[in-house]
Length: 259
Image (cartoon, rainbow, N blue to C red; front, side, top):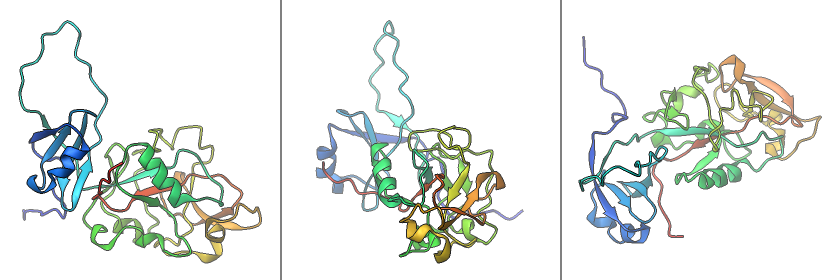
C-alpha cells in the first residue's frame, strides 16, 4: 500500500554519542559549539540533557541499576543512550483540589519539584483562556500527548477537542507528578477531573467555579468522571468537591536558567 508519513519524528531516536561536561555552567558556556540533537552528560549531577533548538532539554532517566560490588571496573567507552522526545506530558497534581485553586502555579511548582524542566499549565479553561488554546499553535498537531511514563494518551492536542469529549483508553494510566496512578490511588477518592470547558475546549463561564476562585457549595464547575473514558465529559458539580486537576506540558523546549 502507500507509505505513511508521520507528522512527528520517530519517538525513539537511534543510539547517539554523548558529550560530557562537569556541570550546567560548563554546558551553557559551550552552547554554540554543540549541534542540535547532541546528548550531554553532566558528571557532577549524573544528569543527561539534549541540545534542542533554542537551548537544552533535560531527559528523565529511569532508576539506577547499581554495579555489583565484586564486578571488575567496566572498560572505558563513550556512553550511548536512547531518548524519547517530541511529546507533551499530561500529569496530575499530587492532591485533589476544590474549585478554589492556584492551579497554574501548582502545575509549575510541582513540575519543578519533580525535576521536569519544561513549563506545565493547568488543564482548565480560565477567565483568560480557553482550554483548547493552552498548548501553543505550533505544537497542537504534531506532538503526541503522553503520560509521565511516555505511554500515548492522545495522538495530539487537537484530537482532545474534536467534540467527542476527549475520549481516551482508560487502560493507560494518568500519573501524578509524584508518580502515583490517579485511576487507582485512594488519595483521589473521586475519579473526576475539573475542566470548566465545553466538549470542544471552550471556557464555560457559568460552570468554572468563578474562574477557579471559589469552593462555594452553591457554585458549579464542569467536570468529567474518568469512568466515562473521557477528559471532557460534561457534568456539573458543586465547587466544594475536591477533584483531580491535570497539568499539560505546554511547550516541549525548555530553557535552563542558572540557579
